[in-house]
Length: 361
Length: 172
Image (cartoon, rainbow over all chains, first blue to last red; front, side, top):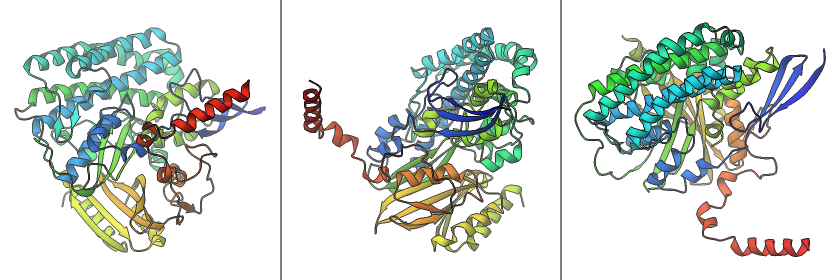
């Protein structure tokens, strides 16, 4: 059998962002993989120690577009912890709505790309068109389709009044039937989707734990860890979040977890809008942020996002460090890819919902 | 005793067996955030092993430079069922710590990252290939880069223009 090394990337038609893979191939099968990162390393972590805490809020939201709300949320939670700031209840509910609307849009983007890679272009367009409902909702509520700028230290800077809530619920009512009656059944039954994704890119539960994987990738292998239930923040402990898992650990299972999580996100948004209490949006004028350190975690669309913050009593943080879920997923590609066909590489890479700008910072 | 309460007790009891300064804060839903500054860096692997024995997962490693006394701190953040325990190791500039990759496979990328960004070394590793930065970039970039504010104050303008003029002359 003929063996050779095949380069994929850093710029490649199947990659949304630059990453370099050197793939060792035996015949038609992947035998090994070597990853070289660093093509979009921007030194954002370094910059956070050169900007004040308010400037960092804007900077951190721009680490990544798809999980852009998760970064400032975790960052604000860290400062609130250090300064002992009590976030008002209304703001906590609104934070969940911002979190879930981003999750819905992010997950739908990923499963749409899966359809595109399979060559099922009409499904790709259908999912992207349905996702536009969430994009329009974000634009209407937050004034922006990607970076919501929803969080401030001590609360939120957006509100949803009665008319706004009715609009959002109307949008959710438009999206849910498309998702439940059209999109999910297609992913569950269509032969083109199933033949390309079932049994492809498999990683089992034990391997997920070994590689430290989180989020839909781990949940697609039956590992039921979700920060929203394991270490609840905001008001997630009151919402009875369903942790979606699938047992098989293949490309299809990861896509199904993401799709089902969109349905769950819709339920959570509806619940928050119904239970939304009256009250202020922020904790008021920002108090002095003393020297201290904090760890915070949130469930970003791709899994656990963890932040470490250290302050020294000035308005410039001494250290801000974060780790995104994609960080561990890269390494696990060697498990998912080995033994699979060359033609499955783009599908497997997409199945970890890779975020390179998040990984490299 | 509820499951959350028993995990809380387990974390606290194991943390107290690790040699070093230990403090903790009780969080929402019975979770705990604990901090341990190890008395000796050589205790890192043994401490990490005792955390792994209670189901800890390595979440992240944070390196902190330029601490008082020219000491770098490396903080290893572990998750145990939603609780977080951080082991801190103090390392002199240019010093090294033992790898924990044999215990936690995902430590590999974290160790490679802080080795290239700081003047820190990890012993016992088999793969020290750069993770993000090109091999031609010197180590310690997080400790020595020129702040962007200095650059944007046009501190390099004269040099840059001189270089451009020289290059243009050469090309003629």
